Length: 117
Image (cartoon, rainbow, N blue to C red):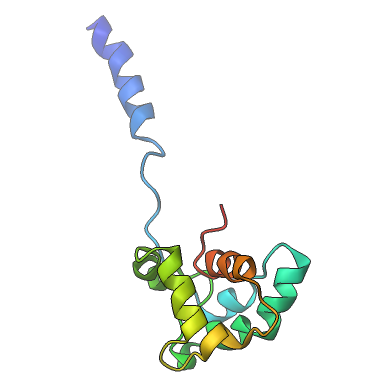
């Protein structure tokens, strides 16, 4: 009986916090409120990616909406970078960011995909 009294609280603690909350879609408003932390990249994003990636009607995945980005993220960062550089569907080559470096693109992709870690 004593073992159960010790084991039960340990099992309860182990069960707490082990699973992530299910992903939920963001609204356009929630997406539009997001900004990169770094000022230069926030300006680049504001002048390019934000225009389409915060408007559902554009069919671009909303910034920060992991329900839309996770399948794309699974393709790998290099595949996403290639898609940006070449253009994809309605997105023009370079995503209309004429001053972005490859590192800027990578950082902005991570930001929009909700992968700022």
